[in-house]
Amino acid sequence: MSTEEKQQLQQSELQKQLWNIANDLRGNMDANEFKNYILSLIFYRYLSENMISYVDNHMLKGEMSYEDAWKKAEYREGLKEDLIDSSDIGYYIQPKYLWSSLIKEIKTGKFDITHLANAVNSITASTEGEESEEDFRNLFDDMDLASTRLGKGEAERTKLISTVMQKIDDIDFSYNDAEIDILGDAYEYLISKFAADAGKKAGEFYTPQQVSKILAKLVTINKSSLKTVYDPTCGSGSLLLRVGNEAKVATYYGQESISTTYNLARMNMLLHGVSFKHFDIKNDDTLENPQHLDKIPFDAIVANPPYSAKWSANPKFLEDDRFSMYGKLAPKSKADYAFICHMLYSLSDNGTMAVVLPHGVLFRGASEGTIRKYIIQNKNWLDAVIGLPANIFYGTSIPTCILVFKKCREHEDNILFIDASKDFEAGKNQNRLRDEDVDKIIKTYINRVEIEKYCHVAPMSEVEENEYNLNIPRYVDTFEEEEEIDIKQVQKDLKDIDKEIAEVDKELNVYLKELGLEEI
Image (cartoon, rainbow, N blue to C red; front, side):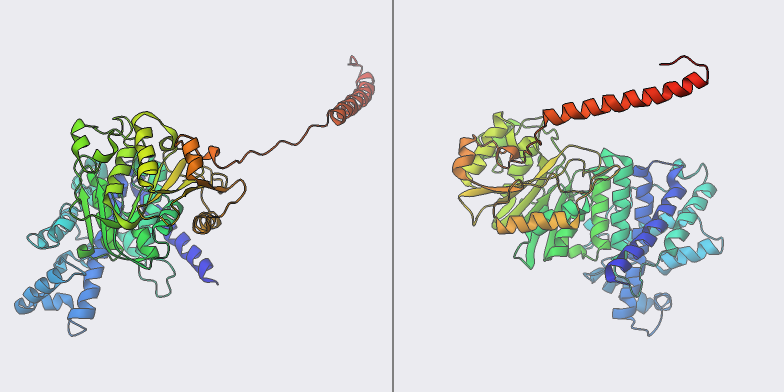
């Protein structure tokens, strides 16, 4: 069995288990709610087992069990201190609250949902006053164990959560021959599944894997490592982590306005083995209250902002360094260019920025047109425009594009236009970019050579002639001439059809006559 076949088999088995778990909660609440329970419980199991693995391998080294060491006061305080100080952990869990202890309680009938609530709270409490506190604060707030949606009484809630926990415990997160990132794939699958089922609201925090891959590859071309990568609308953090798959990242920065999604992003970082010391995720509105201005500039920036979102467009922002150079603000009803301006301000001179946006940013006029012209004419920061297929994002079928920006460009006298809108695999609910489609986009971006009906390297003079309108069809001609119609052949075909109909009618009349019915 090839590695790819083994990956597909393991992913299929994992996904089947995960969706069975989801079905236990499906009747009680909608997808956007029960994701909080499944993902939080998977994450709690990870924190528990990750800590025990660290203790066994780096601290006790087989001398005794964690439980036995905890019973001894001199060991217990040392364990607490070392776990909190460790850049790999940053928290501790009492033996009675370990995942394995809770599962043992379930199997012996001694478990109560309040035990889980206490266990979750104990992790947060262990970080109070410590360096890791901010990254663990309120992490589990979205898993409401007192909710009546889990059951009318405590006994019902305990029964349902016990069932879910046991099924999560049955998942082998440490296959010896695993060809996939078990925990990472679990999160990836569930997040994408929830986005598909829960519609636009859920889709806001998830960028499809193949689109993420394109963005990550674009900002890491010819780079094996990055000091920093930033996503100002980071959602669940999957896009940031995708950049980490393409290059070694020292520190991840992100901001997310929705608290539930912010919690998910922090979980996702920790679950993928990113130390709390190597990520900085904030919960606030990026445009109104940016939290990382003291950390700029960033080596790479990736983003999939909410399309045409509203923002205040307060005149005070004309004095803000992020927006002041353009002389205009993005309109209140469409914050797309506000995000672009914010990200360009945050980008280093040698960095690359790739952002997904609706096609309107390419041609809309008024203040947006003014900002677009300034970016191209005065700064020459726009490197490429890439058109994507329609219906590849959860919750919206509109076609989108990727804009690639660089402050120090190798190709200062042109802009690359790629029309990749025709290359995809059609799906029932969403279309999907294939690996070959992704590879073609990246290869075309790197080579920067004309390909008929796919890409065009437009000199600045051409962009100027088009009055800085970047609508892709102005630059990439994808028109296919229709085959000429042979009128004489069509007339002949019609006569032949009439003749055939007459013969059929004649034959039919014979049968009708035999049956004593009226002929046609």
